[in-house]
Amino acid sequence: MSLSVHFQNVSVIIDGRKILDAINTEIPSGSVTALIGPNGAGKTTMLKVILGKISYLGNVIYKSDNKGELAVPRFGYVPQSMDFDRGQPMTVLDFLVMPYQRKPLWLGRRGNFVAKAKENLKIVESLHLTNYQVGKLSGGELQRVLLASALCGDPNLLLLDEPVSGIDIAGERLFCDLLESIQHQRRFTMIIVSHDLSVVSNHADHVICLNKSMICQGSTGEVLTPANLQVVFGHHTEIVRNPHLDAAERRGQEGKTDGRL
Amino acid sequence: MDVYDLIYKFFASIFPYQWAQSTFIIRAAIGLSLLTVLCGAMGIMVVNFRMAFFSDTISHSAFTGIALGLLLGINPWLTLVLFGLLIGLGIIRVKRHTELSTDTVIGVFFSTVIAIGIAIISARRGLSRDLQSYLFGDILTISEPELTAMILLFILSAVYIWLTYNRLLFVGLHENLASSKGINTTFYEYSFAALLAVVVAFSIRAVGLLLVTALLILPAASARVLARSSGKLLWWAIVLGALSGLLGLVASLAIDIATGAAVILVASGFFLLANLWRLFAKSRQI
Image (tube, each protein chain N blue to C red):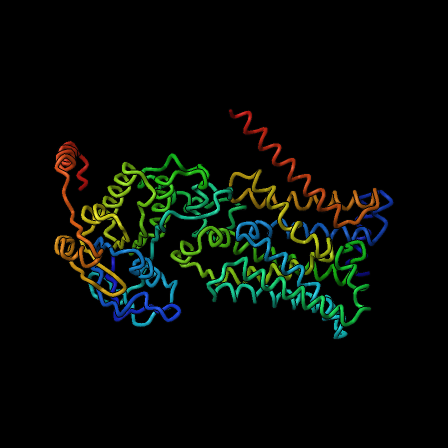
C-alpha cells in the first residue's frame, strides 16, 4: 500500500543560509514524482528531510492512500552513484541480507532472508550477480543491486537520488524501464531526483520544480513547459521529441508481449 | 581453591612443559589470546569506518590519562580508560556537529591530548620513569584482577559484536543508506567508539600505546585480503589475531624480546603472506 507525503511549510536553514524556504506540497499516493531544479536548488535536501537526516522547520506528514489516515513510511532509498569502500569483502547476497538479518553473518545467512534477496535480485534482472563482490560491480549493476536492496524492505515510499547519473544510455534505459515496471506492479509512491529531463518526461507523472522555494508543481505535461523551465533553469529549455527514437519506441511497443508500459 | 588455581592446574596437566608451570605465562597467554581475538574483531570495524587515526588518538590519549592518574594519585588504569572514553566520545560528538573533515577533528584532539600529557610530565619530572612501561606494554606482568577485568571486557564485547556485526558493517558502508533502512546510525557510531576506547585502553597492557593501532589494523587488513564474504571476514581476523598473539608470545620468550613487538611482527608477517597468496592466486587466474 502506498502513501502520500505532505510538506507543510518546511524550511531548512544551515549556518544561517536557507536551503529550503517554506515548501508546501503534496506528493500524491502511488505517483512517480520527479524533483527538478538547478544545482543547489534543495532537491537532495528535500530527500534528506524525508529520510530524517536533517533538521527542519515545519511538518512532514504521511497519509495512507485509501483512508487518508496518518501512515508510517517504509523507505526504500537508492543513493546517487554510491561512494563506498570497494575493497571490503562483501558479496551482493551479504549486502542484501545484512541490514535485515539480526543473526551475525559469521554464523551464516537465514534462509528466509536469502530467499527474499534472491527474489528481489530476480525482479531487477540481476540474479546472476548473487555471489559477485559488491566492490567489483559496474555502475549500472550497482544501481540495480541498490534497487533490489531498497525493494527488500517492502517500501511504500521509494526515494531515488539521481539514480541514472554515471550510467551509460543503454543502462539508463534498462534501469528506468525496470523501475517503471516494478512501480506498476507494487504501486508504491516514488520520488526521483533527476537532472535528466528526458527521464522525467518519460517516467514521471507528477513534477515539483524547486529553486530553494517552490516554483511550480503539477502533472508532467502541465509543468514541463518552456516558460516554467526557463524560470527554473534561467535560460531557454525545451523538451523536443526525437522522431527517430519515437518511431523506434513504437516498433518496440508493438513487438512487446509482456504488457509492460 | 579459587578459579585461577584450577586454571593453572589444568594448563600444567595438559601441557607437560616447563613454561606451563609458570603462572605468569599462563595469565599472559590467556590475556593475550583474549585481547588479540577482540582486537581482530574490532579491527574489522576500525578499517571499515576508516578509524585507524581515531584509535591512534585514543592510544596516545592514554599517555595523558596515565599522567593524570599519577599526578592525582588515582589508579592510572582507571584514568587511562576514563580519559580514553572521554576523548573517543568527544571526537564523535565534534565530528557530527561540525563541517570539518574527520581527520582534521581527530588531528585537533590528537595534538591537544599529547600536549596536555607533555605539559603534565614536564611539570612533574619524576613521572616520566613510571610512564615507560605503558609505552611498550608488558603482558607478562598481568595480575589476576587485571585478567578478570579483561575476561569481563571480552564477554561484553563478544555480546556487542554478536548483536551489532551486520548493522555496523552496513553503517560503515553508507550511512544514509543505513538510515533509510531504519538503522539508528548515531547509536552505532557512539557505542562502537565507546567500546573501542575501552578495548584500546586494555590493549595498551599487552603491546604498549605505540603499537595498539597495529594490533587492531593488521589482522583485519590481512583478513580483508583473504576473505571473500562479510561472514568469513570475522573468522579470518580473529584466527590471525589469536595466532599472532600466541606465536608472538612464544617468540618473545624464546629470543627474549618485548612481547608486544613480537606479536606485531608476527601479525605483519601474516599480512605479507596474505598479500603474497593473493598475488599468487591472481597470477594463476590469468
